[in-house]
Length: 575
Ligand SMILES: Nc1ncnc2c1ncn2[C@@H]1O[C@H](COP(=O)(O)OP(=O)(O)OP(=O)(O)O)[C@@H](O)[C@H]1O
Ligand SMILES: [Mg+2]
Image (cartoon, rainbow, N blue to C red):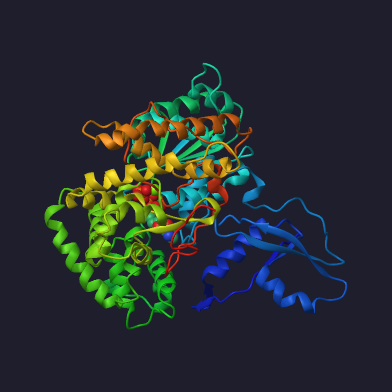
């Protein structure tokens, strides 16, 4: 038997004779990248042993690799020793197949059984479309991404993630899919036909995320599946797609303990919901520990929040100032208040709404104003755009930079990396929906909408689409694709200020440039750009934190930080 080995070094927790913690997940992932007979080491371990190796052994640097946990890339070394084989096929990592799976800012907690279930179901020969369903914040997207990463070796033509959360116009689904796959319009052939041709002999997994936004496009998904017999689709949606042959998998919440019959601390922290709380709390507050004193409150919080990951993240984000018992007391009050008005919502949705509302009530006035105003963006925002749009009149009651840092800390915003490492700030869809509601209630929606339009019209006017900076500008416009499209729609609305309306044609310039870029880009799955869909409908929808759009998302880092936005200059000017 050829044994494989993986060595990694990090602090693990010992509980009940077993070990837990992120380093264990990492080493398991490293092991799964190895072949029989191969010994792999991570960088921390390499640093510890490199000077004490036997003379006839050495460590071969295999370079950086993305392991299947979707975390940051890891430098991997291989032990080369006299009695071991030295040459192996390439490592079984994410790079082994084409994909655009986005990196995740945090490690997945638990879900081993669910990933296995999804895998088993999707690989059954009769299953072509599997839809993960459940209310907002249950962890559908996270589960889909991890399942897709784990399935990568089964799909020789790759695994591709299409974020649909920012679309409300179902006609844009085909162009989003085409863009991710690198299929371009050719001649008179409709894009859908192009996609069908491209996929007809491919063994590929397509992940369609947040399909509930575009349910009317379900028949197109069905058509693509019929045309491509080896294709499989993994969808996430709050509502099933309702097409022939669809299988549904209702994503369960994370496992919660019964607060009335509390187990020992060891057992307690093995419940997924409790582990998620602990991991988020540790990331927020160094030195946070679960103790016999705070355990009952933590267990009760997780139970009150029905094991909903998003709700637990929001609660744990407050640990810096509030001990678990205070979080519990305030949360319970908020959830009680909520049962009045929102009785018609399904129970878990009501809980999530309560958690978001609770987190919102703890913001100060300045943060509340900024939070609502930021809803105007779609597909993310840079710090520069936030300052320009949310403080256009200089009346934001706080410094925008401080406000953004604070909202990142509170898990209401997440930080990702845009072109050239510039931070972009995203809202998970459920939170974006709530922010939009707050913006509508504030009565400022129109004014902020104009500020948004002015800013992006300005960007379009400033863009230099010929000359040495062309590539840089195209990348920047592509990152702002959703905001530009929203602006285009807004400038066409009746009643829009004439000043803004008159400037609208400038948007057609980047639209054409992005389309040209798409046509010029090389084949395969990279480098394509989309036009703005100038003739297509409007939308003012949300975005997703795990939003991979197109090839760029594949390698991007997301550094959700506690503390100030990382790498953010106060103003991100041009290079
Ligand atoms: N098992 C998990 N481990 C760690 N974090 C998780 C886990 N499941 C979900 N999360 C986190 O919880 C949040 C909500 O999860 P996710 O976005 O997957 O929910 P969703 O069901 O797709 O929501 P929506 O319907 O709004 O798209 C995210 O921040 C995600 O990273
Ligand atoms: Mg989702």
